[in-house]
Image (cartoon, rainbow, N blue to C red; front, side):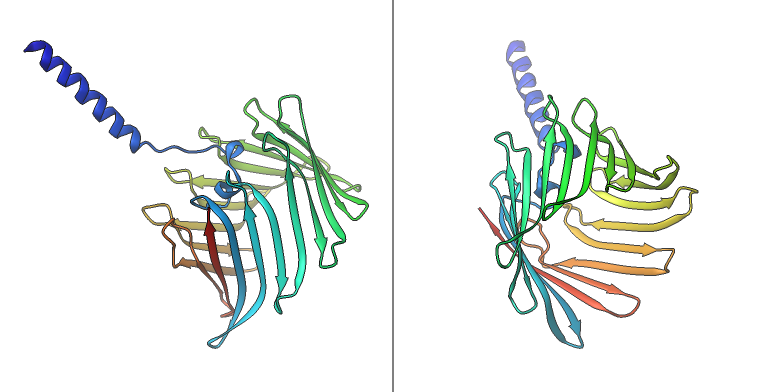
Length: 278
């Protein structure tokens, strides 16, 4: 009888342990996120069709529409943009190596001519090392990256052929960016950004400061108990500007289908999304 009691107790402990693991909060570090996770999107998304509109009285006037295509593992493959009349504006194709590392992307106009492109280089560990952005045949910008042992970018230098700007990134214990510092070519701190997260790893507070500590911008993000986006409040202290974004009509996966953006000038912009899943 004693042996049976011990066995039952052991099975009970395993069961409790398994239940606890089901409710365990798993936070994915920035370096390991795919494009869907970086955009706070849920589910196995295949396509997102977004229409941007301006609301005048009770009438919605279309401004543009964008369709994004994703791979089954959550990486962006193609972006097609149309204007207010439904005419094709541009098409972006993103290409990857076999290990899912981004190789290069190209943007072409309505006639199929390449207008912009970007190429990526990686170090011996497979971590991002360099990025070069082109406009037609002209090199616009080159970015050199420095990463830590996990692959998180801790420093990047942007060179536009005239000067170089340096940016450093600090991460919290979960591998999420918590502070970003931007330096002038002289090495003087120009601006820094602090980012705070909730217990689920979702960004809730973002503050932008001048190098002297004066706060320029503040962004507050609100979610419901399931982590679905509800509201974003953006304030620009320098220009005394405030915008409020509200999100509604969430689908069964928790992704919003309607975004409403309002500002002090009573301008109202609306984005409608149609999401197709695999």
